[in-house]
Length: 500
Image (cartoon, rainbow, N blue to C red):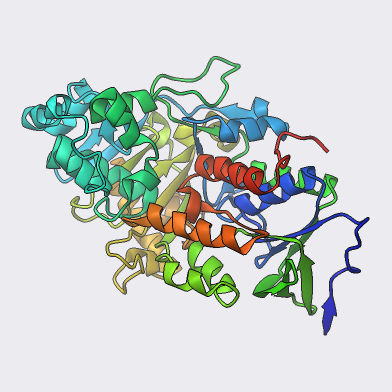
């Protein structure tokens, strides 16, 4: 069955907008446009809202199946949570901090870094990881010209760190953190995308360490209970980050936004001064007229949808993000009550015998979850999958591509090694594997310039806004702030602070 959208818009009717994609950026765009007075329809191919901010239930616990925290170096997510009535649910993680698994064994990860780059090479935790020679080499950063590594000739995370602080900082601190957070080799990542403002801060502060210290000054999440610990650069929500999605969806419904899950947009075209979107659901295929079109998909999907209408986008298609597989375990293991590796452990690529890139000890990280789980019951999240080349595609020997049973077995082995506590199948109360294909944008070197070209092309088309992590950078804070900026540039008054 084919149909059309609602009756044609008359001059007296509300302007219409269609948002393609129901992840965080799409939901935020819909909220801003509805606040500005537009009639908004959101099309989401999946049956669930929120994209990589998802939820699943294991062992009677409601858990995040994707993102479980947000960066507090900006106020973007905290402000949004307050607007949605969740301000009182913002919490800091436990202060124990994370560890790093190095080839010569586990070490506590320094708490005063950005992407693992230390603010002080002589901090005892940093020196313990680097050794005397590594700390000496890293301290050379202080004496180098501020422009060293800040020019256009050095753009990858690895190139910047090597030039300023040396290989030992790169191998023992930066690679594990970048692998755990971005699922990628720091040689491949554009430093201006994954650490925006860092090189500019380096030029003004005089060194990379000073720039890191500057960025570590937490200005974001409020701390009404006085629980924030020094060095904490992330926060979460009681009940999980998935509660943010539930609150957003409820807010959109209260604003009269039409939310169509299970509806995949498969073609767009120009229609007069606006756009037409063809989308298929289980029931039918419909065409939606939009004076304003927002595309909130991952990079390859966004370009694929738009390139027939905007051929210039085809050459700007980004690489797909890596396949990331997340294994969640709920275990009955009182030996883990002591939090043997703090809130979790990142894995250096050179560490032998371990397939996971990171383990989060969720019940050690979040007090609210520990209280819900009860003594002796623990939630562990192990991540698999890294981008190792310019394509970011999963290879046949990538552990992220293993089937569920093989990943479960690998997770038990890896968790036992990383935590120093043997875990067997009899200890597992429940488990699940969630796979995210392309959810982490792959910000390869030169990606910032590609983003500028993409947005220039979209701006010239008129009536088109592109949002999402592939343009904003990885992480909720980047996506929330960027979405607001893009809306305000095209639709002044599309402010997320307005109440229905």
